[in-house]
Length: 285
Ligand code: L34
Image (cartoon, rainbow, N blue to C red; front, side, top):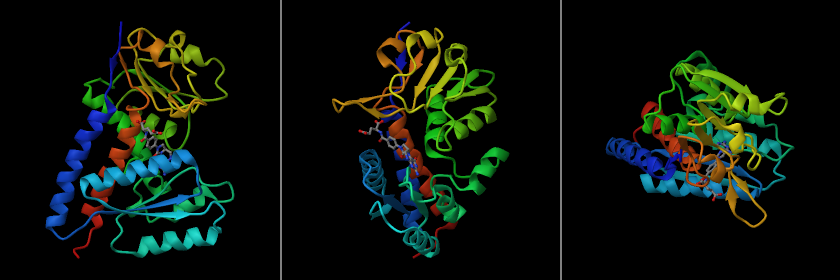
């Protein structure tokens, strides 16, 4: 079988069109959706991702300011900035681009963001609500993955879903979302004894390992749906996923490419969260 390649760019465009409509409705009421981004240091990948977020926000009529802070910024300055943004009534969404430089306490800083303004859904309050199955801002990459599956009409209920990776950004929350949609979920990680034994059982395989091409064709069941979350830049400057795309696409029923798969969805879902927050807490100006 040769897989259908899921066009994340096209689906992200559709999501953006929905967001633009919502943003226009808000503006007609005098509410201008506004996202504040905090970017610390000069990690080249983060620079690209944040640039993509700014461009996409502009396209749909969401205002953004990116606070670019030097890698050695004192923790106190980041805390002050978060407090300032929490209190600014013009700001609806706040996002701290990860990873942060090592001297900054990531978890503590995420916890300082006003949970109502948490555009990423990374505040423990919102992650707790996700765990409880309560409505809340959902982490963007996991939510984008579910949207891809839904847009392709792929049923989740009852399926064996295997997630490779247990990060707070992707692995854990995507597992919870799949579970809430009635999949049987297995989460694999670096200490998993026999990774291939698990991945070969997956009807839906989500790979967020952060290692180039760790999943080869021998690790995938015939007809599986394969979602590749990895974005790895190779020495020649090209991008590749965590899945060996060329080999696995001959075996899977659906597969996401890198680039142009999950990445654009992460950006689109962020915009969606931002207008949702503006709808909830926006003040007329
Ligand atoms: N706080 N930190 C926070 N929120 C997030 O949702 C993220 N994530 C991950 C890293 N850190 C974060 C992102 O924004 C990953 N991520 C992200 C965002 C955009 C893209 C990929 C990952 C993206 O636009 N990918 C393009 C290619 C980009 C390129 O050329 O390098 C794609 O088509 O996959």
